[in-house]
Length: 118
Image 1 (cartoon, rainbow, N blue to C red):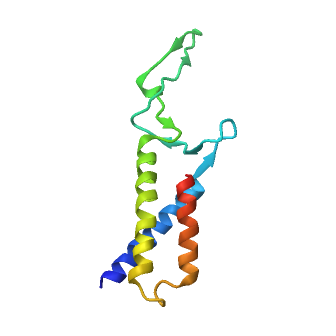
Image 2 (cartoon, rainbow, N blue to C red):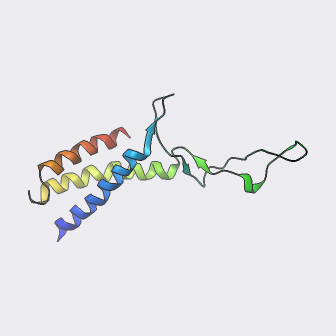
């Protein structure tokens, strides 16, 4: 049944949105919301280490791949921000009151608004 698939998909997206709500944070320096820290293959930073003779050395093994708000996180969050409100509006339209009642509707409206701010 199409309504069950819709509600199951909406449930997965709701859980994903809840994850991002907990995973993001606002940087107090500039007020920007970030994800992370996360591993990010598109970003790598060389780490300078000291040799026993006091010289700096960089090796491939000492490269870090940590980032704030890597492209992958931004892409996932953008897709979630677009899909969740759309599926919630379809659920309001095509589901019964027993399957998608007022409490769940209000919760999803609030979550949609929160996603727009992320």
